[in-house]
Image (cartoon, rainbow, N blue to C red; front, top):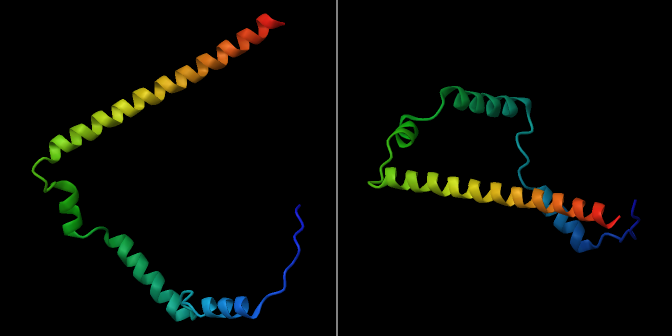
Length: 104
């Protein structure tokens, strides 16, 4: 455990703490909490709007299919490179342990 010198609070820090404490920290009454909870529950049960669903289903960009294929190919390339790097790392670790055995 580290021990620090505890510095006295300056008047500037105290006023900054008070200013920050005035910000809204959520509903403070039980009725306010219930109202927020009901609104969140209603939104989560209702799901996305029809416009959001349409945006997910039918892409609007004329080259959307080409862009999707490019993203998929980039993802495959990244996976290949990551797998190769992992194999190299394992190979280096294996060769390092074999060199240690030969030295002994």
